[in-house]
Image 1 (cartoon, helix red, strand yellow):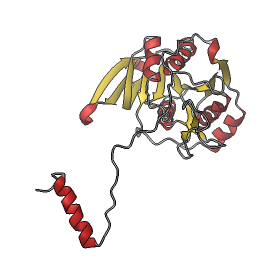
Image 2 (cartoon, one colour):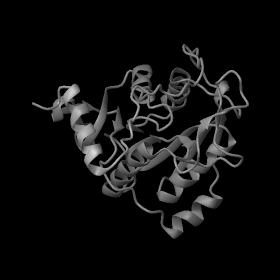
Image 3 (cartoon, rainbow, N blue to C red):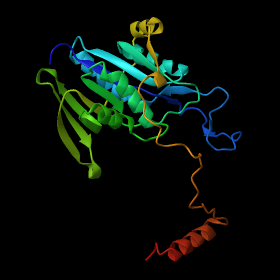
Length: 266
Protein backbone atom coordinates (compact mmCIF):
# COMPACT_ATOMS: atom_id res chain seq x y z
CA UNK A 1 0.00 0.00 0.00
CA UNK A 2 1.29 3.43 -0.95
CA UNK A 3 0.70 6.28 1.48
CA UNK A 4 -1.21 6.47 4.78
CA UNK A 5 -4.46 4.64 5.46
CA UNK A 6 -7.74 6.33 4.65
CA UNK A 7 -10.72 5.14 6.70
CA UNK A 8 -14.43 5.97 6.53
CA UNK A 9 -16.75 5.34 9.51
CA UNK A 10 -20.50 5.62 8.87
CA UNK A 11 -22.50 6.99 11.79
CA UNK A 12 -26.23 7.51 12.27
CA UNK A 13 -28.34 9.76 14.47
CA UNK A 14 -31.16 7.89 16.24
CA UNK A 15 -33.78 8.70 18.83
CA UNK A 16 -32.25 8.39 22.27
CA UNK A 17 -33.39 5.36 24.25
CA UNK A 18 -33.43 7.59 27.34
CA UNK A 19 -36.57 9.40 26.17
CA UNK A 20 -40.17 8.20 25.69
CA UNK A 21 -40.92 6.72 22.29
CA UNK A 22 -44.44 5.71 21.26
CA UNK A 23 -46.66 5.59 18.20
CA UNK A 24 -47.95 9.11 17.56
CA UNK A 25 -51.66 9.14 18.49
CA UNK A 26 -52.16 12.27 16.37
CA UNK A 27 -51.23 10.42 13.17
CA UNK A 28 -54.11 8.17 12.09
CA UNK A 29 -51.91 6.47 9.49
CA UNK A 30 -49.73 4.97 12.24
CA UNK A 31 -46.55 5.91 10.37
CA UNK A 32 -45.16 8.37 12.91
CA UNK A 33 -43.45 8.04 16.25
CA UNK A 34 -43.86 10.49 19.12
CA UNK A 35 -40.79 11.15 21.24
CA UNK A 36 -42.01 14.08 23.30
CA UNK A 37 -42.18 17.77 22.46
CA UNK A 38 -38.40 17.99 22.66
CA UNK A 39 -37.15 14.63 21.33
CA UNK A 40 -33.67 13.51 22.30
CA UNK A 41 -31.25 12.26 19.65
CA UNK A 42 -27.95 10.45 20.02
CA UNK A 43 -25.18 8.70 18.12
CA UNK A 44 -26.21 5.13 17.34
CA UNK A 45 -24.31 3.10 19.93
CA UNK A 46 -23.41 0.36 17.43
CA UNK A 47 -21.69 2.98 15.26
CA UNK A 48 -19.84 4.25 18.32
CA UNK A 49 -18.04 0.89 18.54
CA UNK A 50 -17.14 1.15 14.84
CA UNK A 51 -15.82 4.67 15.38
CA UNK A 52 -13.66 3.55 18.28
CA UNK A 53 -12.19 0.75 16.14
CA UNK A 54 -11.34 3.28 13.44
CA UNK A 55 -9.69 5.53 16.02
CA UNK A 56 -7.63 2.62 17.33
CA UNK A 57 -6.34 1.96 13.82
CA UNK A 58 -5.51 5.66 13.57
CA UNK A 59 -3.60 5.46 16.86
CA UNK A 60 -1.68 2.39 15.67
CA UNK A 61 -0.76 3.84 12.27
CA UNK A 62 0.19 7.54 12.51
CA UNK A 63 -0.88 9.54 9.49
CA UNK A 64 -4.15 7.65 9.07
CA UNK A 65 -6.92 9.91 7.78
CA UNK A 66 -10.24 9.09 9.46
CA UNK A 67 -13.51 10.44 8.01
CA UNK A 68 -16.93 10.20 9.68
CA UNK A 69 -20.02 10.29 7.46
CA UNK A 70 -23.71 10.58 8.27
CA UNK A 71 -26.91 10.69 6.23
CA UNK A 72 -29.71 12.76 7.73
CA UNK A 73 -31.35 16.17 8.21
CA UNK A 74 -29.61 19.26 9.58
CA UNK A 75 -29.88 18.04 13.20
CA UNK A 76 -27.70 14.99 12.33
CA UNK A 77 -24.72 17.35 12.32
CA UNK A 78 -24.53 16.64 16.05
CA UNK A 79 -23.28 13.07 15.54
CA UNK A 80 -20.51 14.33 13.24
CA UNK A 81 -19.47 16.82 15.93
CA UNK A 82 -19.42 13.92 18.37
CA UNK A 83 -17.22 11.88 16.03
CA UNK A 84 -14.84 14.81 15.57
CA UNK A 85 -14.68 15.32 19.33
CA UNK A 86 -13.65 11.68 19.73
CA UNK A 87 -10.81 12.11 17.22
CA UNK A 88 -12.12 11.86 13.64
CA UNK A 89 -10.28 14.13 11.18
CA UNK A 90 -13.12 15.11 8.85
CA UNK A 91 -16.92 15.09 8.86
CA UNK A 92 -19.13 14.45 5.82
CA UNK A 93 -22.86 15.21 5.96
CA UNK A 94 -25.12 13.84 3.22
CA UNK A 95 -28.02 16.16 3.89
CA UNK A 96 -31.65 15.03 3.61
CA UNK A 97 -34.95 16.80 4.25
CA UNK A 98 -36.42 16.79 7.76
CA UNK A 99 -39.04 14.04 7.92
CA UNK A 100 -37.54 12.15 4.99
CA UNK A 101 -36.91 8.51 5.87
CA UNK A 102 -34.55 7.06 3.26
CA UNK A 103 -34.33 3.28 3.03
CA UNK A 104 -31.09 1.30 3.41
CA UNK A 105 -30.98 0.95 -0.40
CA UNK A 106 -30.99 4.73 -0.84
CA UNK A 107 -28.58 5.39 2.03
CA UNK A 108 -26.06 2.82 0.81
CA UNK A 109 -26.23 4.13 -2.76
CA UNK A 110 -25.52 7.70 -1.61
CA UNK A 111 -22.64 6.62 0.62
CA UNK A 112 -21.18 4.44 -2.13
CA UNK A 113 -21.41 7.30 -4.63
CA UNK A 114 -19.57 9.63 -2.24
CA UNK A 115 -17.01 6.98 -1.24
CA UNK A 116 -16.19 5.73 -4.72
CA UNK A 117 -14.29 8.90 -5.56
CA UNK A 118 -12.39 8.96 -2.25
CA UNK A 119 -10.60 5.61 -2.48
CA UNK A 120 -11.01 4.59 1.16
CA UNK A 121 -8.89 1.65 2.29
CA UNK A 122 -11.38 0.57 4.95
CA UNK A 123 -15.06 1.36 5.52
CA UNK A 124 -16.53 0.64 8.97
CA UNK A 125 -20.16 0.64 10.09
CA UNK A 126 -21.97 -0.54 13.18
CA UNK A 127 -23.52 -3.99 12.89
CA UNK A 128 -27.00 -2.38 12.89
CA UNK A 129 -28.92 0.72 13.92
CA UNK A 130 -30.82 0.98 17.19
CA UNK A 131 -33.99 2.24 15.52
CA UNK A 132 -34.61 -0.22 12.66
CA UNK A 133 -32.27 -3.11 13.62
CA UNK A 134 -31.85 -3.97 9.92
CA UNK A 135 -28.05 -4.14 9.56
CA UNK A 136 -28.19 -3.68 5.78
CA UNK A 137 -26.28 -0.50 5.00
CA UNK A 138 -22.75 -1.89 5.46
CA UNK A 139 -23.17 -4.99 3.25
CA UNK A 140 -25.07 -2.95 0.64
CA UNK A 141 -22.20 -0.42 0.47
CA UNK A 142 -19.80 -3.30 -0.12
CA UNK A 143 -22.04 -4.73 -2.85
CA UNK A 144 -22.30 -1.40 -4.65
CA UNK A 145 -18.55 -0.78 -4.51
CA UNK A 146 -17.75 -4.44 -5.31
CA UNK A 147 -15.68 -4.77 -2.13
CA UNK A 148 -15.21 -7.76 0.20
CA UNK A 149 -17.23 -7.52 3.40
CA UNK A 150 -17.40 -9.24 6.79
CA UNK A 151 -20.36 -8.58 9.09
CA UNK A 152 -20.62 -8.84 12.89
CA UNK A 153 -16.87 -8.47 13.38
CA UNK A 154 -15.67 -9.04 16.95
CA UNK A 155 -11.97 -8.41 16.28
CA UNK A 156 -9.75 -7.51 13.35
CA UNK A 157 -6.14 -6.72 12.55
CA UNK A 158 -5.11 -4.58 9.62
CA UNK A 159 -1.77 -5.01 7.83
CA UNK A 160 -1.19 -2.04 5.50
CA UNK A 161 2.17 -3.38 4.35
CA UNK A 162 0.46 -6.58 3.17
CA UNK A 163 -2.61 -4.71 1.94
CA UNK A 164 -5.01 -6.91 3.89
CA UNK A 165 -7.18 -7.17 6.98
CA UNK A 166 -7.84 -10.27 9.07
CA UNK A 167 -11.27 -10.26 10.73
CA UNK A 168 -13.02 -12.56 13.17
CA UNK A 169 -16.83 -12.71 13.18
CA UNK A 170 -19.60 -14.31 15.19
CA UNK A 171 -21.63 -17.16 13.75
CA UNK A 172 -24.33 -19.38 15.21
CA UNK A 173 -23.83 -21.67 18.22
CA UNK A 174 -21.20 -19.38 19.71
CA UNK A 175 -18.63 -20.24 17.05
CA UNK A 176 -16.38 -17.79 15.21
CA UNK A 177 -15.00 -17.56 11.71
CA UNK A 178 -11.75 -15.95 10.63
CA UNK A 179 -11.52 -14.15 7.30
CA UNK A 180 -8.60 -12.63 5.41
CA UNK A 181 -9.57 -9.83 3.02
CA UNK A 182 -7.61 -7.72 0.60
CA UNK A 183 -8.00 -3.98 1.03
CA UNK A 184 -10.10 -2.01 0.35
CA UNK A 185 -12.82 -3.75 2.37
CA UNK A 186 -15.96 -3.14 4.43
CA UNK A 187 -16.46 -4.37 8.02
CA UNK A 188 -19.57 -4.07 10.18
CA UNK A 189 -18.57 -3.95 13.84
CA UNK A 190 -20.34 -5.91 16.60
CA UNK A 191 -21.18 -4.25 19.91
CA UNK A 192 -18.93 -4.98 22.87
CA UNK A 193 -15.77 -5.20 20.77
CA UNK A 194 -14.27 -2.29 22.69
CA UNK A 195 -14.97 0.50 25.16
CA UNK A 196 -15.51 3.78 23.25
CA UNK A 197 -13.31 6.59 24.48
CA UNK A 198 -14.49 9.78 26.10
CA UNK A 199 -13.83 12.91 23.98
CA UNK A 200 -10.79 14.93 25.00
CA UNK A 201 -11.15 18.65 25.68
CA UNK A 202 -8.84 19.62 22.81
CA UNK A 203 -10.89 17.56 20.35
CA UNK A 204 -14.16 18.97 21.71
CA UNK A 205 -12.94 22.53 21.17
CA UNK A 206 -11.75 21.69 17.66
CA UNK A 207 -15.00 19.93 16.78
CA UNK A 208 -17.09 22.98 17.64
CA UNK A 209 -15.42 25.12 14.99
CA UNK A 210 -14.34 22.62 12.35
CA UNK A 211 -16.05 22.97 8.97
CA UNK A 212 -18.02 20.01 7.67
CA UNK A 213 -18.31 18.76 4.12
CA UNK A 214 -22.03 19.06 3.32
CA UNK A 215 -23.58 17.50 0.22
CA UNK A 216 -27.24 17.23 -0.76
CA UNK A 217 -27.98 13.50 -0.71
CA UNK A 218 -30.47 13.74 -3.59
CA UNK A 219 -27.75 15.26 -5.78
CA UNK A 220 -25.82 11.98 -5.61
CA UNK A 221 -26.67 8.93 -7.71
CA UNK A 222 -29.29 7.06 -5.71
CA UNK A 223 -31.36 3.91 -5.76
CA UNK A 224 -35.12 3.52 -5.65
CA UNK A 225 -36.54 3.04 -2.12
CA UNK A 226 -37.63 -0.61 -2.82
CA UNK A 227 -39.52 -0.69 0.47
CA UNK A 228 -42.02 1.48 2.31
CA UNK A 229 -43.40 1.79 5.84
CA UNK A 230 -46.97 0.55 6.14
CA UNK A 231 -47.56 1.43 9.80
CA UNK A 232 -46.20 0.92 13.30
CA UNK A 233 -48.03 -1.56 15.54
CA UNK A 234 -47.38 -2.69 19.09
CA UNK A 235 -46.68 -6.41 19.57
CA UNK A 236 -49.65 -8.43 20.72
CA UNK A 237 -49.64 -9.84 24.20
CA UNK A 238 -49.58 -13.61 23.92
CA UNK A 239 -49.66 -14.35 27.65
CA UNK A 240 -51.43 -12.73 30.53
CA UNK A 241 -50.20 -12.82 34.10
CA UNK A 242 -52.37 -14.29 36.85
CA UNK A 243 -52.46 -12.91 40.38
CA UNK A 244 -53.22 -15.43 43.11
CA UNK A 245 -55.16 -14.20 46.12
CA UNK A 246 -55.88 -15.63 49.55
CA UNK A 247 -53.73 -16.82 52.39
CA UNK A 248 -50.22 -18.11 51.72
CA UNK A 249 -51.49 -21.68 52.11
CA UNK A 250 -54.35 -21.08 49.64
CA UNK A 251 -52.03 -19.46 47.11
CA UNK A 252 -49.51 -22.30 47.42
CA UNK A 253 -52.24 -24.87 46.89
CA UNK A 254 -53.60 -23.03 43.86
CA UNK A 255 -50.09 -22.70 42.39
CA UNK A 256 -49.50 -26.46 42.75
CA UNK A 257 -52.84 -27.12 41.06
CA UNK A 258 -51.99 -24.83 38.11
CA UNK A 259 -48.55 -26.40 37.64
CA UNK A 260 -50.12 -29.84 37.74
CA UNK A 261 -52.69 -28.90 35.10
CA UNK A 262 -49.91 -27.74 32.81
CA UNK A 263 -47.99 -30.97 33.28
CA UNK A 264 -45.07 -29.23 34.99
CA UNK A 265 -45.16 -31.46 38.08
CA UNK A 266 -44.56 -35.20 38.10
